[in-house]
Length: 164
Image 1: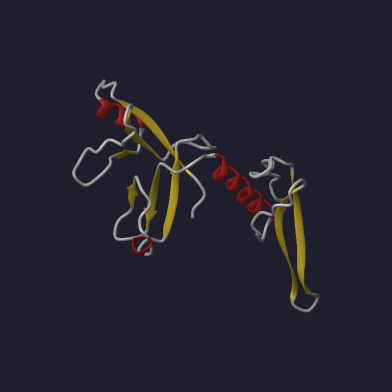
Image 2: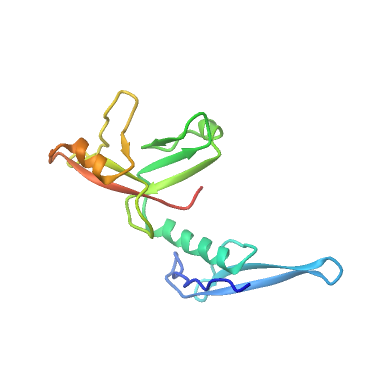
């Protein structure tokens, strides 16, 4: 099986070109396994080690996105009592309840937005539609309907970054 060749993003720290690295482990009696990762030609930064080149390249590129996308605007939590999106990161004791935590960014990576958020144009405070917290909308159309022509709020797309 041939793996898909993924173009590597530059190093998130120095901007240098990345290259593939690999290491075999094991011997003839117990099978031979390989580990793959990416390295920067300039500063030597190494990406996460994975069992396939494709997965390692995707992890390297996701790390690059995390460094270049700025601070998250919200966090998505899955697998607890109910899935939620919050405009702040939950304290650690509450994060333990959920199976996964995904930061959401306003910068545009690959793919489409997961949610849309209304943010006050002057104060930069997210719109609170209910006493339960900030409203996040699964589609741009739903968020625009909530705006109802108001120019007080900006419509902010939120994209998933690498899971923490």
